[in-house]
Length: 92
Image 1 (cartoon, one colour):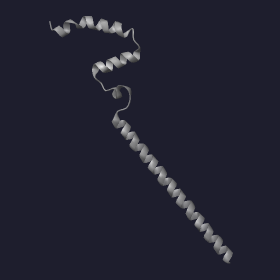
Image 2 (tube, rainbow, N blue to C red):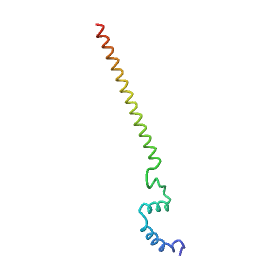
Image 3 (cartoon, rainbow, N blue to C red):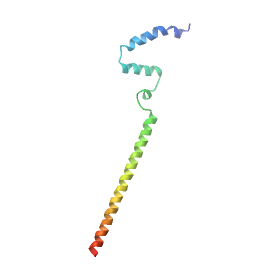
Image 4 (tube, rainbow, N blue to C red):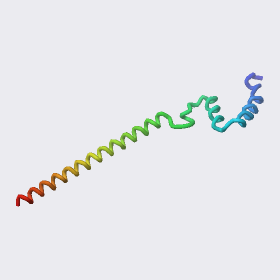
């Protein structure tokens, strides 16, 4: 019998007994470490997802700045138009 398999029946009950004594969070952490899974994959977002969200947020911010600039230009134009009408009215 393969040596790695000969210890398996003993190992599983030991793991089960040990996991019963520790918190679920610690058990998950141990499992992640044992499997070699990067923590961000198990517990959070990948860097790629974070970068995508940052790009989307930057795009929304840029669009908001452009919208505010456009609105400001419209207000200034309306103010100039009103001043011109006022000036024409006074000259009559």
